[in-house]
Length: 456
Image (tube, rainbow, N blue to C red):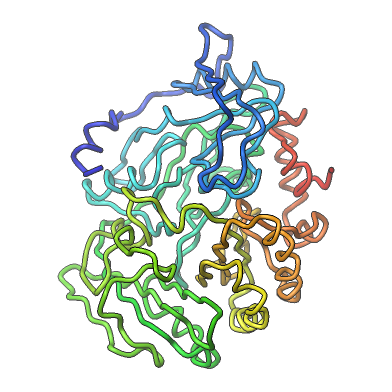
């Protein structure tokens, strides 16, 4: 979709609608509910547990659905690899609630409906001279689902995408429309990364930067030994840096360096980066895959939203039919953690597409994987061999255990609930916040009950 088509189709509501603090939820008309064959997630590694999917078109309809349903989970873009968004009873999709509500140029903030995808939002922002501070590796994911799971981009100075949230609005289990802001509400810090447990997120306000350009270069075959003494230098070689490792040799297969350019600055990259040589052809993170779907490389400058993701909006991202796991360890343990995983190379290789290493700045969001610690994320894209990968994950988690890893909330992991909860200092406050807005557990599914509340 080009920018002009997007702007035509967004039905931009400049000024936005004024919503009441408490939503009136007396049903006035039937809400669209579709019961086809059960949906699958993006990678098709599982099928959702119900075909009862509701598609509201207004915030009032969201309230109607919440009051009507005894149990309800919210779908994002269905990019989760586990059942964090699953329900055996009812699902609600925001595919119709995907608009820009308002753009505040003075405050450098945009307010959007929860279902909007980053790729669509980014094109609009750039057209208006603004940018987000970072993007995930693919632009196909929704804002509400992304912030609920602390999904991230990369960069020593960049927090995850949830850290750009300035205010959030959701419908709680009582049908009340609740708004929390970073400036006024202490509970805000528990409500952003809420794992779907507070209710459907209807509106989000995001902080913005002036639009900027990025150039991207890829370096090949960096000796693993370079990480030992230069780890922070390598991870800080650009605005955003990713290391792609296939664990087949004692080297890093690809180093993706994305450099933020000052106005009028020409891209400049060294030919050698700690023993890695600059690529002269376009690359894909997964060996032997066509790089056409990847964002532009070879040092060619372009808009931030065309370079910060690894993949283009108009293409299927990554490998497609795959599995993903990701573990966050403290930045200071990054090199040791990579070595710990490398010791399992022979066991990993039969099931591996590629692993990626990224850095993320610490934040204060209670359930963020980077809560109060600068982090390194060890992400692995697996072949879709589900029994074998699920049997192998406990071994990887065991290798990383001494670094107190926190798993990505929407990817595959087997860490026991008690262990997981011990790694989140604000877990009790988070449970209390969920109970306050959802006392009967309307939004709790098997995943939340098991991981957050320790209930089988």
